[in-house]
Length: 196
Picture 1 (cartoon, one colour):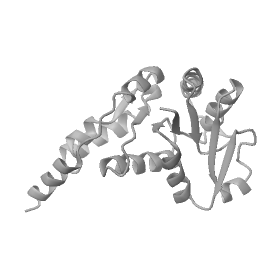
Picture 2 (picture 1 turned 90 degrees about the horizontal axis):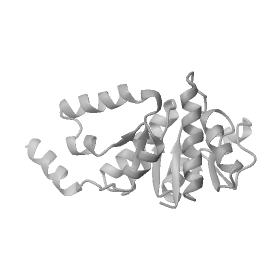
Picture 3 (picture 1 turned 30 degrees about the vertical axis):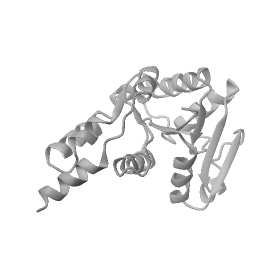
């Protein structure tokens, strides 16, 4: 993986472990000479992650809708900033520029970005690994809901089980390097059969 897109909060969160996790992930990306792609903001966990990378001489690419740039939340010290016209364009460019994705704690924007790339992989529109960095057990309730969704028959168990999750950034990247996409032919055949 030469570049990883990280989805994370424009807020810091209430637990010190969130910021510490962002710094730790940034340090690991630096050590492995992996380029960071992210939302381009100079606030919250996004700022912590970008500043950690930049302080160590890493390459950091931001992607931000023009409206947010005009609201003065754009980071001014990045290697490169792509200014786009919409959130949809932002996500499309993130997918194009990245070899993999990691979701860290964040709010609606993070959930939206995570859901989109998970869906892309499910439909095999991309075959890029997606990691969930579960700092301070932040994602536990969401992951339990995914398990519930699978039990209720709205999510294939193989897709639920293929989510890559860890609390440790280094272990997460190790797991992501072993990622294998789920065959689309089998689950499409299954849903057709159950819909008869």
